[in-house]
Image (cartoon, rainbow, N blue to C red; front, top):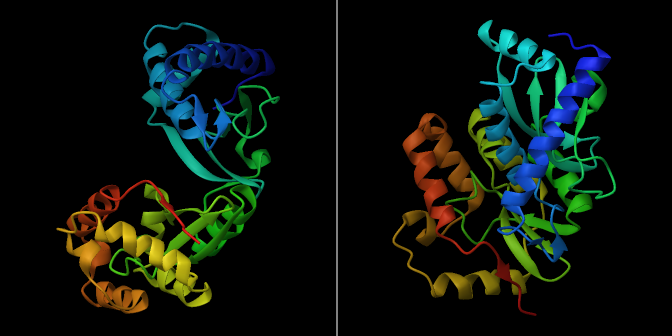
Length: 267
């Protein structure tokens, strides 16, 4: 799908308007992210809200770029929600429309940047994250975290193999998104196992903080109560072909969602 400069300018203008509307909706609900003011850190929420408004606007907006996008969709094209690495500097949520990388949350890392950026995908330096090692590399820089193996919930480790701990002592399991769960399953948990072998175990104070949390919650799910070696769980799940089992995946995700969003590491 080709767009000339005038059409790109018009599309950007329309998306900026949708972004402003989205900000008015989102700001009251997400005023801060890890102590940073909106829109910092809210690329997913913003992308999803603008996406919803954009799809609706396509039904009635008759501007030239919208007409071209509608024609592209009628021919079988899609507006893809994408998450990945931008310039290997940080994680970003964007949209991909044909050859175009459309970032409607361009200011969520550096707030002085324009809200919207539209460039050709092959010039955007945006790539899917296909290994946990690449995830760890970016997370360490972008989130300023230390990363350890998930030994505290070993039955979840094939899906969520890592623990992140930031400078404030806040810790959480990673990588908690559909893309990285798919990386684990598509590799038959081999990539989870590999990063578990390569990554250091958490310090004792991290383990103890997680154990205190687990002692206080309902562990009805076996994912939260089983003990053992995380690498062994990768091997067990692979032998049982659970990489093809969506119900098992969903049960793991539901168990993960039952956990607190984060655990404070007490020194």
